[in-house]
Image (tube, rainbow, N blue to C red; front, side, top):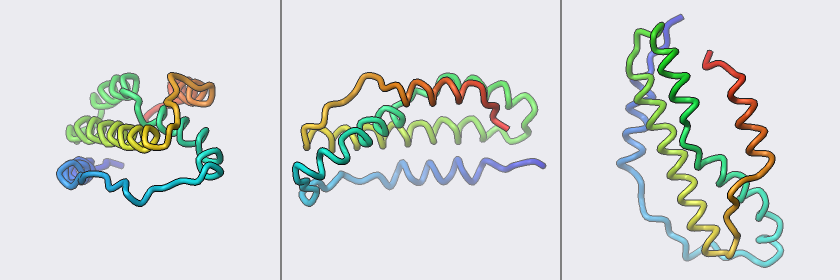
Length: 120
């Protein structure tokens, strides 16, 4: 079965041009809310900030057998969108004094597991 990645590429391109400034004036947190979400937001921010180097390398290998060359561009645009999410989370975290983590064991395990998976 042959997939068409042109639609995904175009979707991520449209998302790039639709990015708007974050409106943070309504995102007040109580200390209890901050404490409850702190760890999850920190871990999610790490995961969204990946450069995707292993994924891009795997995609280039996959492209040898894929007729749709828009696959790699769609993947790179996807990674850039995830990195944008990481930046938006970082703004939120800074606003609420949630420290950014350099690493977390959950993220490290997830990254190792992904390396064993194929793109198929």
